[in-house]
Length: 313
Length: 318
Image (cartoon, rainbow over all chains, first blue to last red; front, side, top):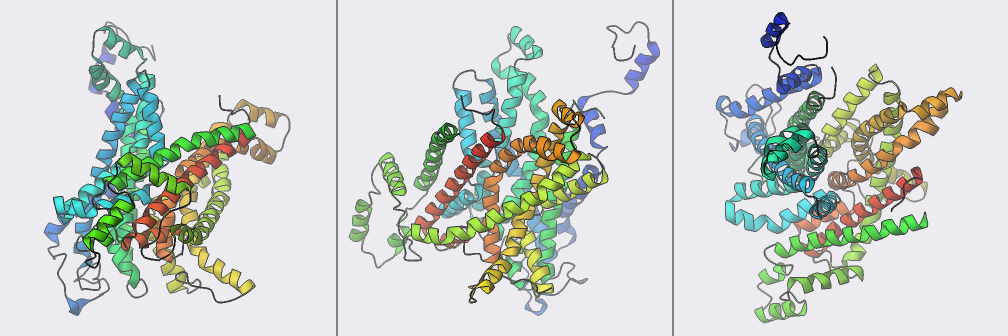
């Protein structure tokens, strides 16, 4: 009887009991497969530890990020300053905990922008049967061949001052960085979603829903989208990492957040002129970016294995 | 082949036009105008400013301004740099070779690493070598170029004192000139090349894995061909086809990395020109450099398409 499921529970009573004892769901199955990827699980632990440190660290380590102390300039790591101090005697641990919040917030928000735009564009292109689909795909390809970083720099150069005036220094830059990074990273998601939609919309269960009179929106939201979600989740994970790198790059070039907002990239930018006398100053934020991005990438790899139902493990 | 090339060229034109529309829209939506510098300068009287606006047609409808701008771009009239006091096209032509040299050498380095490693990993999947190389690939593309650049400077310039810190004018002549130039280019090329090699290795590995189980490879082995011939002549050539596309799609990211490395190592290329122009509010240079980057991306996509046609003769455009 292996491999076949009975239509009604008539004969095999013990088998039924066994089935009820071990509930089955696609998410549970995915979690079981995710655990088989040791590096992904380890990365999840590392990332969780970093998020906890960033979220609760400032309540434990109560040093102000802008506490200038010229008597303690460029001190190497010690018990008083575990990560050392910078050229103004500011405590680097406090600055990094604060900067981590911004870097992660930018990464997550930009990912949401990218996923939302990408899913909408991909869904419309995947559902339309006329000229809309090809036109949207042409637009996607066009955006794919845009040089992202130069364009990012151009937009920030042109819009910096007016956004600063509208939303304040911190808010203005945050909104702009998130929108621009997200706005230049939606294309792979749109392609993925469209490809999924093209095959899913012809499947029998969607046809059944259509025959029952489900509207197009209901077909998409209830039936097609949940089945297309796996690759989108993987792309979302990778997008967080890419957005964190993009934000750090902007700050590193001195064109992201202003100096009084110490994101990890900004700390690196300040540290790069003191490499010969204070290497630790650059090493800590650099390692933080690297560790975050590496763990996110490994988690993405684990999710790719876990969410692919064709994979037999 | 010639017809294929022409068709690809014709397809590249609309995407260039589309990119130019996006760039121009961004510029036109921006508050202020390119003459902001003159406008805030109290020495310029209002009537002169007004005359300038009329002369450059800044009050015309946006469509007319776009066509004037694109016509000027095609005629090579790219404007005048406020900061450097020379024509923008001369400035860019001076800076372009350094950028292309670094990017080109980095690509060659990346291919030299990625091809053998990727093929080796794919011929022995899930072996120790495969696992080590895939871990290194993950580390490689998780290390942002700005951090690798600083690490390289820290190790090779500060600690070991083997290589020069940043670019400088080489005063030597003859062979020594080449040697000094090569020495200062090693670190930026290595930073960009290793970053590229990391993702390329994974592309090569999965492409070779897709091909290596196909029947024609078994046929080649059954004919009694050596393993080396089978891999090099039969597997790699076919596996390269998707790799070429993926590498072309990576081009925008490579230019991003080039801007960062040029900034770290002070290479006099167009990436560092862009940053200094932004810091100096030099709008004509910013627009032109962004447009050049866009053109380069389209150009590399075109090259990828041509390579595609050469690698796979079945591909034609219907």
